[in-house]
Amino acid sequence: GATKCKPGKHLPSAGWATDACHSCGANRYSSANRSACLPCPSNAVSSEASSVMEDCRCDLGYTGPDGGACVACPAGHFKDVNGSSGCVQCSQGKFSAGTARTSDATCSPCSSDAHSGNGSSICLCNSGYTG
Image 1: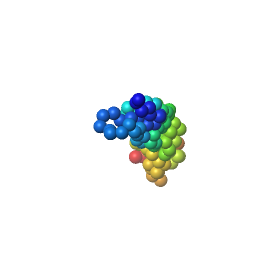
Image 2: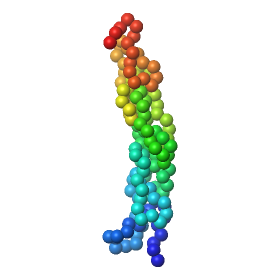
Image 3: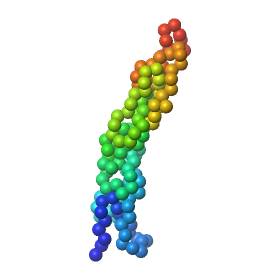
Image 4: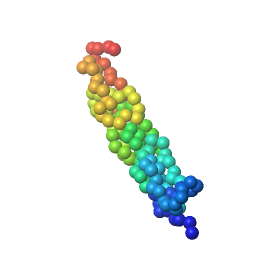
């Protein structure tokens, strides 16, 4: 009889001498009795031997539901953890012009003659200064 593989494993077809089930690699998943593992959605990651699409969690700098589409954090924000949590705003006095940032360190301080609110993509000149 054919070998039945548990979720998180797959049975590679041609070219394998044994009927051994192999674990899905990282960033892939498989339900039971699959011959191949499926890739996680873009910008999502999973651990080895993942068994459901919900094991695919958004990578750093991206947010979205587990197993769903992951979108880049907007400018002025960052996300330094995996999963479905939201993007975090750069703190007051800092800014970040780029998207998909992965740490607070990517938020740059405004110059001494400028300021910003939370979650800013730009700094604004303080009154009395132009730039």
